[in-house]
Length: 389
Image (cartoon, rainbow, N blue to C red; front, top):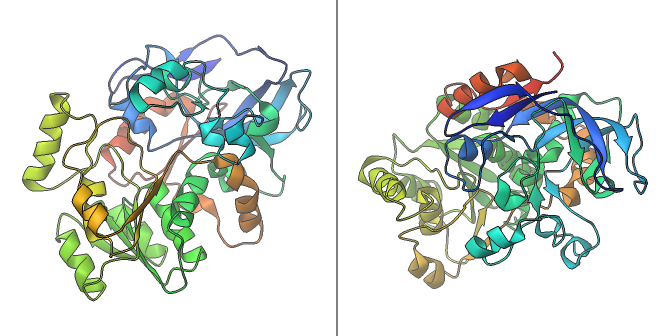
């Protein structure tokens, strides 16, 4: 089968690899009909996530048709059309039983690696380094889905792939980011990063009752898409973000701030170079400029929600502002399975059509070009790929 594989920093090739097979009685094999490149895949592409190995199959946003199931799979069968959650979750451990599916205690066979870096391990994740299990991803023609009864959800034939594909990750991620803000009617929410997750965070914040949402980015196409979703916008290359937010909120600051940027934040002037040099010298692993800004700008007693991916250690974290302002910080890999069905209901009711975020449609063979376009961001916000075209 064809698969998009990682061969080093900014080196993606589509090659022929062996088709997956059932390894466990809880597995399913899915023939992938639509897959996507996620913003967090760019961290792999740019070589800033450790424990990648040459030939790893990428991708954790995908859906398709079940073609084989293990003997203990009960909730799906061959022929079912399903979307697959990006965290691999057993459904039985303490975390899964409490709805914290991205903390599954049984799905990461390489938990010891994550524990050395993070203290505790997250769940296994498709196509996202050996620290999260080394599982083959879904930018391919077929994929093995462990714990298929927990990780797959059947979707109605009345909806197109592009309407439900993002239930695998970015729609639940943006929604959970907004939900973590505990939004009250009339709140103002600021969102750093108007990429795909930021776009869903903007729309989710409005669905949850925000009166104003302010999107922060520098890419014109992203800022336009944010405005199309009713957000006000700030271009951080043209304005001082803190001063602009104070002007827009009467000096109080946003009620909640969402960092949808994560570990590769871009920053103007010297502070941007500072973080880049520290990262190059391995004196910090992540560039936390957006997180610093969010903490400094958030109102006293407000909430900072962090769906952006961080992998290790950061410098100049404003702990004094966090403590003295009594800020609540909520974060985490998304518990996607918790949100898939409620968000499907929102799609079916017409509250949102997630396909709005798609700007490029490619063949799987074009994955290297898709990664390059997405990485350069110029007009490219979301890439979906068809493995069989």
